Image (tube, rainbow, N blue to C red; front, side):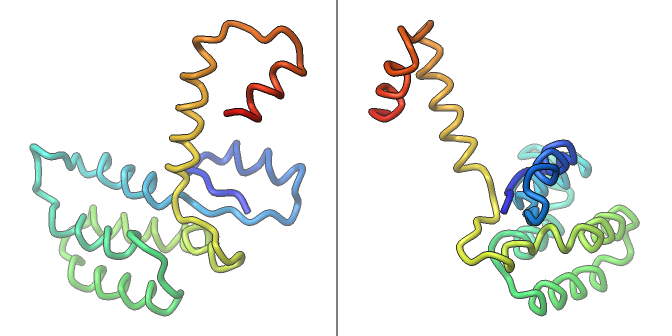
Length: 144
């Protein structure tokens, strides 16, 4: 199982090595892209109610039936706004990747925890210019 943002290159590289790998789109990155597309920010709360609905749809793990029921309710309620309809069509297009966590129990819906570990490790390694040898590197990483 691969959990990552909407970057086809990562997924395709993984598929070359692990042919049967499932791809879970990171819900937080997906929601962030929706906010960027709408120009939503703490200063511009024009789309607040729609974003709240999207957070309810993508904020936690839902069964496929619950996901579809919520998505249908959202699109019916917000059908007056073409931007919202386009976003909901995009969500429908990516539904299998957004719900891929159903293939493997315990799969997270976000890769933010992994990213935070990577950032922390990168900042720690930045102060260490080099390791004496591979044994020293393995020892350091084991301690980390």
